[in-house]
Length: 448
Image 1 (cartoon, rainbow, N blue to C red):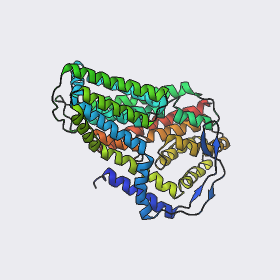
Image 2 (cartoon, helix red, strand yellow):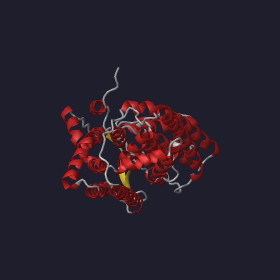
Image 3 (cartoon, rainbow, N blue to C red):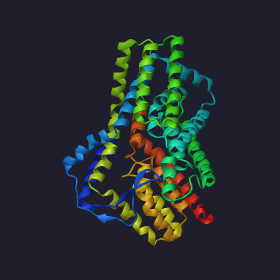
Image 4 (cartoon, one colour):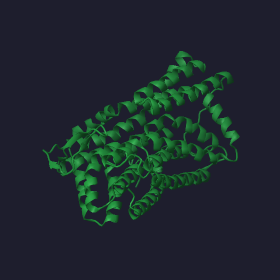
C-alpha cells in the first residue's frame, strides 16, 4: 500500500473527525479565567454532557477554509518568507556565500549539524520555536545541498532539534512554564534534573542526525532533493550587501521575537521588507523583484494550504464538542493504575491528545487542571505529572500531521511526509524511552 499524499491524509483526518462527532457523546468542562496564566482553564470535576452538535459533511469541508482563516497569520508568514527568499536566491548572493562556506568546511562538514542543532534547540527551549523555523528553511536547504547533505537533514537539524529542546526544556514558557503554573509549582523548579535529561536527549538526536547525514552524503552535492537551477552570478559587492541584509534581518527577527513579543504578522512584514530591499540592491529591479515574489508565492502555496488543512481537524473537533470528551475518557481510567504505571500512561495519553490538540499551551490548560487532582490522589509528585505532559506532548511535534508547521516545513524542504516519518518516528521512540526512564527516576527520587 502506498502512503497517502499529505493532502489526502489530512482530508481523511478531517472526515474521520467529522464522523466521530456523530459517534462520541458531546461534552465539555466548565472553564474559568486563570489570573496566573492569563488563560481560560478547565475546572476539574466539571465535565458534563452538552447537546450533540454533529458536523455534517458540508460543514467538514467548510472547516478547511475556516482552518486557513484561523491560521491566517502563519499562512501569510509562509507565503511572504517564500517570496522573499526566492528574491534573495535570484540575486545569487546566498548560493555564493553558502558555496564558500561549504568549501571551507570540506572534510568536516558534519560539524555544522551540532552547531546549527544547538541553535535551534536553544530556540525551542527558550520560546518553543516552531513556526519561526519556516523562515530559516530556505537558507538551510541551500547550505545543506552545497555541503552534499540530504534536504531531510535540514529539517532534522532545525525542526527536530527545536522540538527536542522544547520537549525537554527546563524553562519553555509555553509548555513547562504554563504546566508548572497550573500545577502550582515554582517556575523553573526541577531545572537541574530537566537539564541533565535535555543534554542526553539532544545528544542522541544530534548523534543520529549526524550519522544519517554522513550515510546519505554525496560528494557531488546532489542528494535526491529538488533540482537546483542555475542562477546568474551577480557582482560580489552587491552580493555582500544582500547577504548582510539577510543576516541583519535574522538578527532583528530573533530580537523581535525574544524581546519585543513579535507575532507572525510582524515577522511577515520584516521578511517582506527584506525581499524588496534585497531585490533592488541585488539588481533585479522592480519588475524582477515582483516576479520573484510571485514565483515564491507559487512555490509556497502548497505548504500554506497544508497548514489550513491541519487546522481544519481541530476546527471540526471543536465544533462537534468532543475534544473534552476525549480528554475525559482518556485520563479517567488512569486513577486505577499503580503510581509508576500511571505516570507512563499519562505520557502516552498526552501523545494521543496532542493529535486533536496540536498546541502545547492549549493542551496544558486543557489537561493539567484535570491531572493535578488525579496525581494528588495517586500520591504522584506534581513535578512528575508535568514531566509526563511535556515529554508526551512535546515529542509528538515530531510526527503528528496536525502540526501545521511540520507539514509546511517538510513541504518547503521538498521531502515527503512519509519519508520524514520513516526518519523521525524510530528516533522519537528512542527519545520516548529516555523520557520514560527520566520519569521513573523522578518518581524514585521524589522530584518536587
